[in-house]
Amino acid sequence: MTRLRLLLDGWLDGVPVIESPNFDARPLGICPELIVIHAISLPPGKFGTNLVERLFTNELPDDLDPKINELQEIRVSAHFFIDRSGRLTQFVSTICRAWHAGVSVWEGRAACNDFSIGIELEGCDYLPFDGKQYTALAALIDNLVEEIPTCSWGSVVGHSDIAPSRKTDPGPFFDWEMLQNERSRLH
Image (cartoon, rainbow, N blue to C red; front, side, top):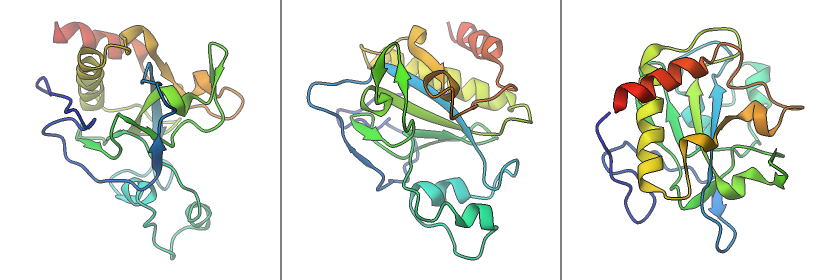
């Protein structure tokens, strides 16, 4: 991914957008400081179904697996989604609060959605991620850190770090070292 410019409205220039209705304003005076990495696939372990996009836009079909049907009334989103091929899509402006972290705490601060950017990777707890995803993720984080002065590589965490009693993602197959290697290749 080439260097992308974060526009004043919080959208990355040149990145495909599918706007999610599942966001609201950050609290007054709060800027993003934390970058939270998630993993999601619908159904679990199945990729390329476009159901994650449909979940984030409240457009899940009614005739799916019962476990997916349970998600019909859930209202969630992330700022960004990286599919298995490394393709990046933005769902929520970085200026706004996406609904990705749920009940969460980081370094004593609750409500991580208020001060974080959520990045979902298409994946699960029991399969490795694709190398293209690490390349895209490292480039995205590098762009965000470059464009948002309150964010840094030192503030990149997993969902399991901020909600350990509820969440396991990005999961045991997420390779933090590979992410750092991809970061090193950028510079």
